[in-house]
Each structure stands twice: as C-alpha cells, then as structure tokens.
Image 1: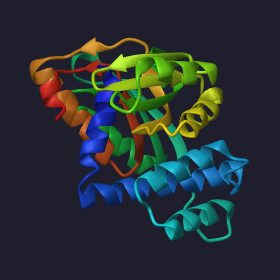
Image 2 (image 1 turned 30 degrees about the vertical axis):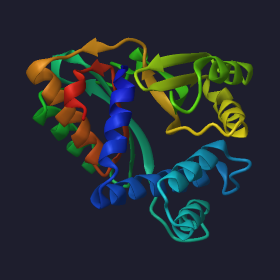
Image 3 (image 1 turned 90 degrees about the horizontal axis):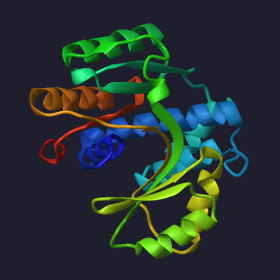
Image 4 (image 1 turned 90 degrees about the vertical axis):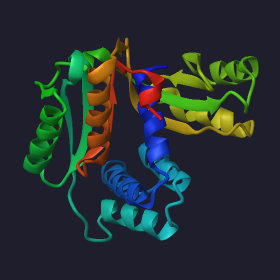
Length: 245
C-alpha cells in the first residue's frame, strides 16, 4: 500500500471522533475561504472551491458554515487572511515529508512544524529538498466491492485518467490535476461512490520503515495532522499495516 493511502486511512479512521471532526471542519473552512478568495465564490467557475465544498459536504458540514466560509473568502464577511505555505523535511529513517500549510501566523506555523519534526526524530529542511519526490495528481479511491476493475478502468480511462491501481481493498484512480473533475464526474454519472477524491501529492517511490522508525513516523504524521496550521501532510514512508489501524 502506498504511503499516501496509509495516511488517508489514518485520516478517515481518526475522523470518527467529535474532537477530530472539529479540527477537520476548521481545515475545510480554511480551504473554502482561500479557494473563494483566489478564484471567486462561484463553485461552477472555481474547481478548487467546488472540490472544497464537496469535501465539506462529505464530512456533513452544515450548509451555513460552508456559505460563511465562501463569504469570508469573497470579502462579504470579515475573515482571517490565511497564507499558503509549503514545508519540506525528513522523518525517521530519512523518509520524505511534504507539508501544506494555511495559516494566519507564519512564525507560529514554522515553529510548531519544526518542533513536531524534531520531537519525532526528523528535521525540517530547505524548500525543494523533497518536493521533487512527489507528483501533484488527482486521486480518487473506490472500494473494490463497489465496482469491478474492468468497468471502473474503462470509465476512468475514457474520461482521461492516467492509471487505475489496485490497493488492498480499494482501487486508486490517478489523474492529471486538469482532468480530475472530468474523471470524478464520469464516475459519479455511473453512480459509483468513492471514499476519497482530492488533488494531492503522490510519492513517486516509497521507503519501507519498520520497528521504532515506523512508530516514530506514525507519531510524526499524526502530530502534523493535528496541527492547526497544517492542511495536509504527505510522506513516501511505507510502514507495517499493524501500525496503521
């Protein structure tokens, strides 16, 4: 299983608690606000906003919250000015870690993120040190029980997908970011449900970790997920399945 998939699994499992759901809502509102600020408040004309709204709806975020986030982004309501920043570094065993941040205080964000890396036995690096190990891709996950591979592959490839991979209980559909919306719509039009759909950073190769290094890596990624200034964190680490559950 890819490193990305493992952390998606962790995210979904941890998202069941009310405390975690509150943090998820905060991150989603930030994304909605920034998407509306940079591309306008009309989701039909703003793919990033459309994706953010769909993600919020999938987490059962109230409609009023979504609308307030959009209005804060367009300036109709007073809101916080979030800055987008990427941080890169190395985790235990030299695993690559790429962090996307949305924050209203960059000094606080970099200090907190550096502390998280250090506490888990990693270190924050210079911009560009690991980003070349990841590709920006559209990523859609469909459970194997929902569709057979041949049908799903035909739909996805015809709509512009680059690849359909098997991953334990799921199929992973990989697209160029510009084709993400059309592929997702093609799947939806066939009433095929998915458990994850996003523009993400996929590792080109994975690095296998075991023992203490694997345990520290889990702690690092969980701490980054819990950090209020971190939107998403990616790694090329591959760890034993028993540590993911």
